[in-house]
Image 1 (spheres, one colour):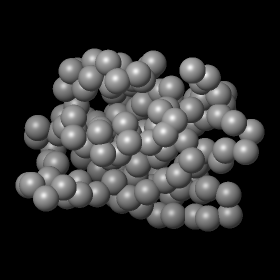
Image 2: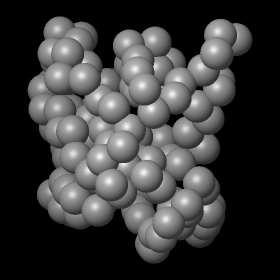
Image 3: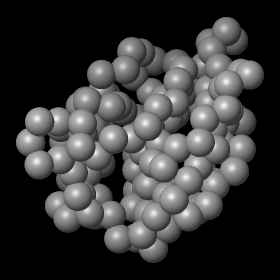
Image 4: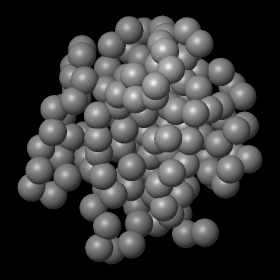
Length: 139
């Protein structure tokens, strides 16, 4: 599996971030989102209440079903996934989520606070790595 993006792909870039918002650029399109799902070819709102059940919350945090819905449904799969725990580390991301993603074919997984997650995402994108990220902009 190639870690690089095809030359025609346009990985979203992070233009700015702050408490409760992140500004994403993809080509000529700018989006300001509260929480973001960044995939190698698109960016979208990370809706914690996307499923019909009670939805995600800070505890228990990111669930396998959230990873299935947002990350593992993308094709081709990203090489690397970054899971943000929030600015203060309040969003729970259990270590088993890393193992789960690796078992599904993801090569590298980072679990980081938001600032470091954004820094790592930007660096990996600049290196041409197919990266996906769930970025939580508060807590």
